[in-house]
Amino acid sequence: MWRSIASNALTLFIVLLVALAGLLAWGRQEFNGPGPLTEAICVKVEKGASLSEVSRTLEAQGAVSDARIFRIGADYSGKGQGLKFGSYLVPEGASMVQVLDVLTAGGASTCGREVNYRIGVAKAEIVLRELDPATNRYVEVVKFDPAAEAAPQPYVDATLAGDLRWQVTLAEGVTSWMVVESLKRADFLEGAVDAVPPEGSLAPDGYEVEKGGARAALLTAMQDKQTRILADLWASRVEGLPYDTPEEALIMASIVEKETGIAAERKQVASVFINRLRAGMRLQTDPTVIYGVTKGEGVLGRGLRQSELRRATPWNTYVIQGLPPTPIANPGRLSIEAALNPDVTEYLFFVADGSGGHAFAKTLAEHNENVARWRAIEAQQGTEGGGVQGQ
Image 1 (cartoon, rainbow, N blue to C red):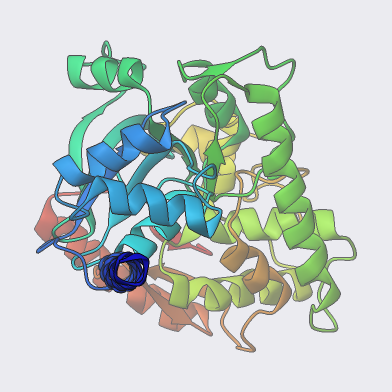
Image 2 (cartoon, helix red, strand yellow):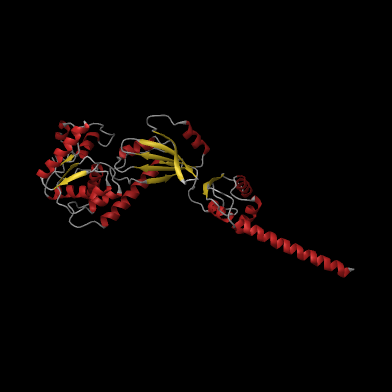
């Protein structure tokens, strides 16, 4: 009898072991195999959420087939306590282990909403965007100018809900005054700015920020980046440039930046001004005259008057010889590179050509022909104004 009982118990034990092994194999397959998602989705991990709460959320959104298996697998892998607050893109067919990796990798959120404060030459705009998981592209929700209008309700609601990424983007050619004035209107930043940074000292780029971050700290980061860029490019400059310091190169870069928005032209434009400096000619560039009028505090908004072209200011390159005393804007990396590694040309003049670019000339006669063509285009378009360099 005891033998029979022992035999039955052993058999039951073996059956239980086999069942347990099968269950573990099934659970392992569920954890590592393809997931149920038929399209990518955004999954939000709430601040302070437990593994159990996140597991149930994932199951409810169809990202995992079984919350218990996900929770057990996360604990077994040692990653169960490493969930990161934020919104994350979970791709189509992601396995549980892949979902866990996404939610514990850290770094910036890869899904959800972002606010980008774009500071441009003429105005600054706050743009709220949301990622469309199906296309993995951001879709604009709302855009507004904080200097001209109140924050729209979708933006207010998004900032109250939290879980936003914040970025400040500086356009090439914006002035330091414009940057400071725009940052003062950034309601997601804090702290005073004691002084406007020197013109040209801020690097145009995108900067990740935290809500409640200090404005002064962001300006310091912009200055540090521009210092690194200038030092790097100065070290690899070509020989024989008509300026002796990085500061003078930055002045030239700012002029190049304001004269053309076409990247492919920057080195040609730089060559014109460098050739003029070497020949002892005045630079005669309108953007410097405009800076002498506005001091970088806003946009002129009209054509230059003849009296302004004749008026003596430290920045009027129709009057002064050589470079002005300071940059006239914050140049980007490509313009700094153009000032330090210009094309080798014989050009001394350029004028707008009607296509958005410029026509370059070696002689005044060629330049006058290009100017005549440009004036004819202006007449056809019913416009009148700048675009001429080296008159």
